[in-house]
Each structure stands twice: as C-alpha cells, then as structure tokens.
Image 1 (cartoon, helix red, strand yellow):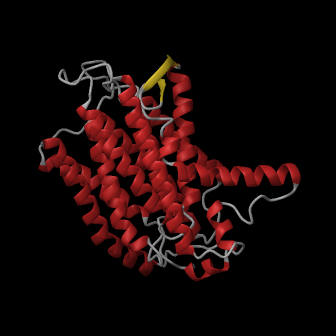
Image 2 (cartoon, rainbow, N blue to C red):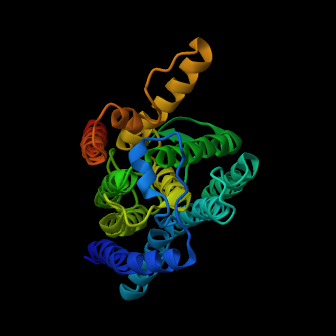
Length: 357
C-alpha cells in the first residue's frame, strides 16, 4: 500500500508544482528579458516565437526533485541510490543545458556553449553517473546498474565496467540529443516525454511486484533490479512535472524548456532505462526521439554523400511544417506515433515476462 502512495504522491506533487510554479518562472524570465533566439532559416511561422521565455526546464527539474523529497518525507520512506542517481543525471545534464541556454540569451549567440565545452559537461556528468551506478551493492549484491546489456531484462555476457561506461555514455548522449532535436515545436517533446515516463512508472511497479528480492514472487521470470519501486517514484514525479509544464508549453507556448529541459529529460530517460535493465527497450519506448534523430542523420549523410537532401528540412517535424501541415497537426500526429511506440514497447516488456515464466 505504501508503494502506491509514494507513486501517487510523487506524481501529484510534481504536477501541482509545475502547474503553479511555471507561470511564476515565466514572469521572472520575462522580467529579465530571457527570451528565445530563433534561427532565420527555419519555418517562417516560428519568427513570432522570438522572445518567448526559455529555460523552462528549470520548472520541471526542481518540481521533480522536490516531489521526490516530499514523497519520502510524507511516507517516511528512505531514498535509494538508484532513484538519487537518476535525479543526479537529470539535474547534471540540465545544468549543462542551462549554461548553454544562458550563453545564448545573455550573449545573443544562437550556438550557446562551444561544442567542446558542451560535450565536456555532458561527458563529466555521464561518466560520473555510469561509474557510480556500478557501486552501492545491496545485501543481494545488486548495484543500480549492471555491466550486462539488457532488453526487457539483462542478457548475454558481462561487458566489463569500461565498455559499460562507454555504452552508458552513448545512451545518455543519444537520448539527450534526441529529446533536444524533438523539442522544436510547442509541446512536442514534453508530451512525448510524459508518455515514456508513464511507461517507466508502470515498468517500475511491475518489476517491484515481480522482484527477485520478494520470496513470494521470486520465480524464473522475476526481475533482478535493485530499486524498482523508487525508479517508479522518480518516473511518476517526472510524468507529473512534465504534465503540469505541458499546460504552459502547449501551443501557443508561453515558455520553452530550452536545452535546460531537453538535456535533463534525455538524461532521465537514459538513467531510468539503465537502472531498470531495459536499455535496448528504450529505443522502442522512445521511438519518436529515435525517428527524429535518424531523420537528421539521414539528411546530413545524404547531403554529404550525394549533395541532395532527403527532407525539405531536418529534424523531421520541420519537413512536415514546410509541406504545409500546421504546427498543432504535426504535434498531435507525432504524439500518436509516440503513443503507439509506448504501447508496442510495453507489449514487448510484458511478452518478455510471459516468455520467461
């Protein structure tokens, strides 16, 4: 019963804090003149967004952390290393994004942080998370992460700590940049993220009920995950916080999440996947982010090899805008695609459990 209370509390508090806190942040950012810089080569409709407050990711990062802490206090529960590490990864990546946004705004430079400085920041945070996630074994010897690859559970041989760190870094950078590329239209990345965090809330609850640490459920299909319940609490807080933020971020957006938010969300998604042993499943659950990232890879690759572009503009959402789709139409249809990805991903997750029984 306490487990469901934690999940309900964290999601509700996260939702409430961003619903109430985001408009306060909008006023603060507008007062300081921290508005979005818009590229001149993008869709013309976007020029009207110039000056809209950005760095809105601050709202849901703080809301998620506060929701987690308050949930632990209210339910008299102890925080876990897995939950704290995912929050650390989210906040650390968010800090790198914040510095990038801040330089864009204050110096009015559309590129923000230098590429090397931005990459260095992401590497420092990512390596710290990866190294720490292989520490802090519990009484059963389980650490927050595992040095084996995972789909719906761990499989294959141990890849060793060095290769694991490289693999974790790839996941963190790929998801962070995937969310960043998706965050080009009002509410698109926020709404898509809500769905994936909802999926990870369900996965955490299921893994908690079917944990190998519980003698009653410890069968052949049980999950060797260190802190599944706490990962569900973090995912629920993120889902609630993003839902509340979406109220203000949906078209026409009153605030943008900026790199502060997109890098933080990508980090949180990668952290949840690594700690819940569903690393490869994330490519399906977060299918929209993968699709949009691949559109950029295809566009750049095609232009360099043949001198021709496959899409009118990359990332993919801008291609459809230039074809005449309205921004809201693109967003809703892409949300439908993301919803289908989550349904397929959860179906595969459940199918993996059934097959292992």
